[in-house]
Image 1 (tube, one colour):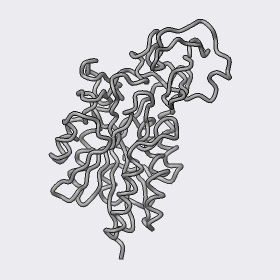
Image 2 (tube, rainbow, N blue to C red; image 1 turned 45 degrees about the vertical axis):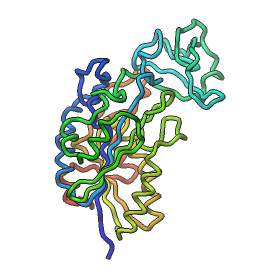
Image 3 (cartoon, rainbow, N blue to C red; image 1 turned 180 degrees about the vertical axis):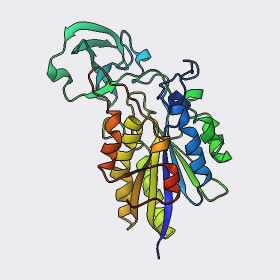
Amino acid sequence: MSKTANVVFLIDLQNGFARSDLTEQEGGSLYVPGGEEAGKPAANLIRHLSNSIVVLSQDFHPADHISFAANHADVQPFSNVYLRPGHNGIYRVVGAEAGGRVMDVDTDARGYITGARKEELLPAAWQGALKQTLWLRHCVQGTESAAFVDPIMAELPASVVGQLQAPGAQPVLSGDDARGNQFHVVRKGMRPDLDSYGIATENDGKSKTAAPALFERMAAQLDADGIGRILVGIGGLATNFCVEFSHADLYRELVPALKARGIESEIQILTDISHGIPAVAPDKSWPDLGAALDRMVSLGSRARATEEFLRGGGGE
């Protein structure tokens, strides 16, 4: 008889999203309303797990990241720019939105904005390009902003904490605890020229983080351990951005890897550790928070609190 196991995905439970008081020197803040409440139920969930897998995504931006408004001249946070890859595959800005129009821009050698021109671009210059929102500085590598919130840090194995505190930018960190739980930290947003909302797929829809390779290893290990079914929980910050994008990644990358080995899976959205961004972008291009859960459930997932997840809460 096959066995069942739990796999939990905790998405971006970091100070940069859960705190609003961090300075630029501390890595900045892109505060998610209610984000400070997510750490405790997530930590409680970890404490009650045994022989499970916990995967934490970590936004891990270099200071010169292309998505930071502060790295461009004459643009405001939460405005949009358009990116195209150059001959070397590195993304650069080709236009910036202003007053409902897409304007030509002057850029430096990296493709970052040094000043905006007055000419409006013809659609051929920007249609089909990658649209990027410019954010406040957040989760900069090696800063307090990039660190996981305190309740999560208190539950991580010492080996993982040591790796998190070490210099460098390893894409995956791993370790075990005394209850047989395996922990993996997947870092994303590490490329200066490309943002990553999802845990596995970067924002160009083609480039991948280290997560797909990790998912393959996880599936192989679960199969070798005789696991025939896994209950997957996912939650974190923000519901309608990195949680929703990562949730879609699980269906694209994890579920097929499991299915190829005959392992069934059910995905549950952990509602008490998920908080979203209710504000709407001026052009209404942001994912609507009110419909985020509905969109995820439409893929086949269920919305559950962590206590229900711990009870193995499948079914209706």
